[in-house]
Amino acid sequence: MEINEKTLMRDVLVNFLRERMSEDKSVMVIDADLAKCAGTIALEKEFPDRALNVGIAEANMAGIAAGLASYGFKPFITSFAPFASRRIADQAMISICYAKQNVKIVGTDPGIAAELNGGTHMPFEDVSIYRAIPDILIYEPTDAAEFAAALPQILDYPHPVYIRMHRKNPPLMHKQGCDFDLMRAEVLEEGTDVTIVATGLMVSTSTEAAKLLKAEGISAEVICCPVCKPLDVATLKASFEKTGAAVTAENHNVNNALGSAVCEAAAENCPVPIERVGVKEKFGEVGKVPYLRDVYGLNAADVVAAAKKAVGRKKIIRFQT
Amino acid sequence: MITSVKELENVARNIRANIVECIASLGVGHIGGCLSIADVLAVLYGKHMRYDPKDPKKEGRDRLVCSKGHAGPAVYSALAEFGFFPKEELYTLNRGGTKLPSHCDMNKTPGVDMTAGSLGQGLSCALGAAIGSKLKGDGATIYAIIGDGESQEGQIWEAAMYAGSHKLDNLIVFTDYNKLQLDGTIADICDLSPLADKWRAFNFAVWDIPGNDVAEIDKAITEAKSVSGKPKMIILNTVKGKGVSFVEEAKVGSHSMNVSAEQRDIALKEIEGGR
Image (cartoon, rainbow over all chains, first blue to last red; front, top):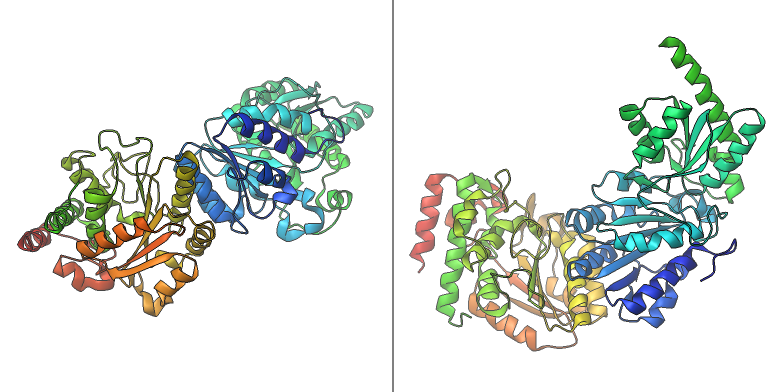
């Protein structure tokens, strides 16, 4: 499929599944009454035996997927991100990860992308939940082009993967056929004064922030970090050693997700002052993305302010040492 | 394949003796709910299941998911009895580095088909295997054993609804209905009755039988295998701790209890005396 600014991420997922399900009879998809939202409903007609819908029973979906994986199948399960994480935390932990069953878990509409569904459906905790479980890889696609490049690697990855997928179309930061490595963070823009490590919706916000910082004479390096577990520490360390300060930016609670992961990696490998942009001790609420960005402090201006603060703290730390 | 009732009863005694030996060697364990399912394990591994102990992951084999994962020692006792690993390994139960942890682990124990222990989850995994078997057309039967206390978990009924709705007739589920759970009696805490009616209402074919009688279990499984178009539930009305009087008498206390060397000798004598 041709990928452009209008391409929806869910269409990338469905297209990939359709291709693989056609050529590999072990690939399956299971939904829990949100197949119309994920777009996977089309596959139920094309592959009635291998595109299942279990009804509104996410725990059962996760268990069935584990059982199928134990039988040699490669199931993808989909639901809204809150139900693909906190609703099935124990099933994902025990039946899937502890049992070493290779299930790919797709959670759609993460964080403020849940928009009008509001607090019950707006997960700022899904990455935190999966980050506490061994072996599982956590991937938040940046855009449709990167997602298309990532999916074959995700299918081949020998462990479970949690995909935090925006259904719609965040700005394209990559070109179709881009050179993508699931295990590597990517330096999108080089800089010397501060590193911005961003994921998901906040990647394009961070490149916008870098432009604003540049106008103020601050050179920001922007790192696109779609995988926060396992974290590409080497890329971050090289950048931190150069810039000496960092900001993390995520559409998620800052606790035990990208911000925490980067702070931990920095503390252990290359301590620098870090400011975290993300949701802080708040639940979700209804609204459109621009309003929600204001509510949770997820605008380019917030990244700019955090970057300046981090750069300022760099001087203090240097003074103290 | 063992066909005589007497021989199946002997196998059940051997499994009980193995359970007592391994739990007593450790001094503590989930002995009540292990002893209650010794008979169904004897009939499954002795007569009905197709498997190869030398090739425990053989494709197309029948599978057993012990969803009440804390009955691991009972499953290990059966697997050792049928040659999946030497009986001496039973004495490693729950010791550091063992292949035999208290709750079933498919990645550790040869012959264990699914990891279970967080209650309510194994039945869904068995459904996945049943669907997988149908997709592959390998003709396997998928068995699952759930606990009666475990049946208070909502996920059991999610799985039941799907299995009934999709007519998964290669799935045979047993409920170990010993009427006792950790904190008290099932009836006092959250009653399951009428249990057979519940499963019928979920579109299962149901057998409600004496659960420690190998002849009745054999008959029910044989009949269940011949029914098509529905998943099957065989309710085993069991006695928790069956076959060892001090465990039976402990009732609710038998869920997990201490077993001394002296008690082991008494228990083994009782089990042997039944031959």
